[in-house]
Length: 143
Ligand code: IDP
Ligand code: MG
Picture (cartoon, rainbow, N blue to C red):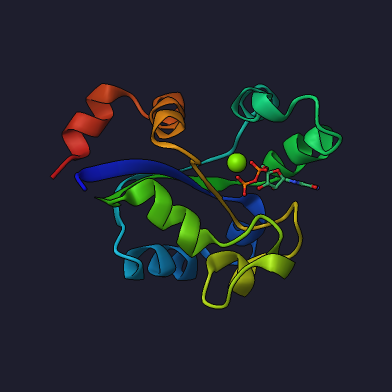
């Protein structure tokens, strides 16, 4: 398996609870390397566009509100099988279903306020990385 990249967001709930370090440690301990990282506050339009795939879902409006309530950390993670590895260390969407040792089991409050986002496929990882990081910026930051 070649080295792959995925996209991660440390969501407003986790940032507000001072958990940037502990969340990033879990990612690093899982074998993922942070190759780009930036704190930002999503605008309503950014959150709407980022989660456009969920626009018909009943939770969409609240999700956009949550994702814009405070700063987030957007990251590019690199490693073998990074997309799958990140999904594993994140845990299930609903923390009640998340396995022991996962980020959501340890830090998430609810199915909505669940600490982290992670791309669900290599194709979406590319799209999501491109949403937040320019290719010039990534080229500069790559080891
Ligand atoms: P994922 O983040 O595990 O990939 P998705 O189904 O893609 O889960 O949902 C995106 C985000 O929308 C979730 O991480 C969570 O913040 C929110 N969400 C998903 N399902 C629900 C729900 O049933 N109620 C409230 N919020 C939800
Ligand atoms: Mg998803």
